[in-house]
Length: 153
Image (cartoon, rainbow, N blue to C red; front, side, top):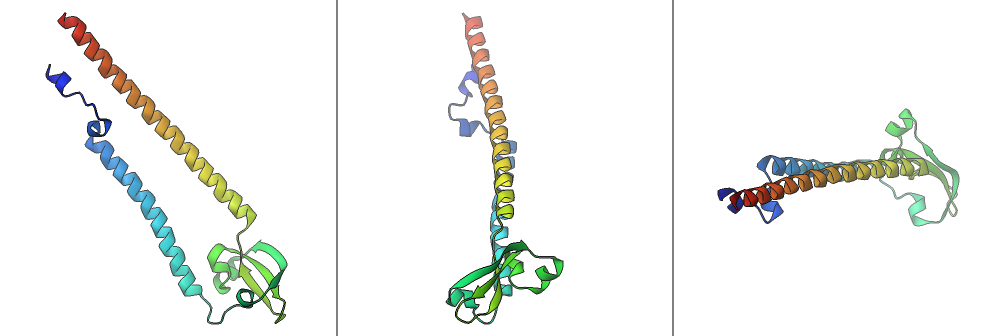
């Protein structure tokens, strides 16, 4: 009889401390990754900010060379390469200056997209397994309860 009183009707109260700790650890790592990346990108942009305003921010420009990946030397020496690792050469129309502007490569975007898709698929499988395990556990408890009720008759 004491076991029946202890049956949990609200699933959140049934969670074990170990599961709660793992849950907190997981979300802590996720938030650390997200906020850490945001802080690091802010740091990079503040350090790499040029003293003068680039011409492409003040006037119209034409892309002379499409987006390409920076090599190791360019990544360290060009301010435009530090943000994304890709740059495009542009020509400002009024001042006729050639400058390099940071850009986002379609190859890089596709790679990030598939990484995201893989992570979401992995999480889907993980949580589907958690749901199946939880359902089996609840089914086992329900069958034990029915068995005990039948035995008491």
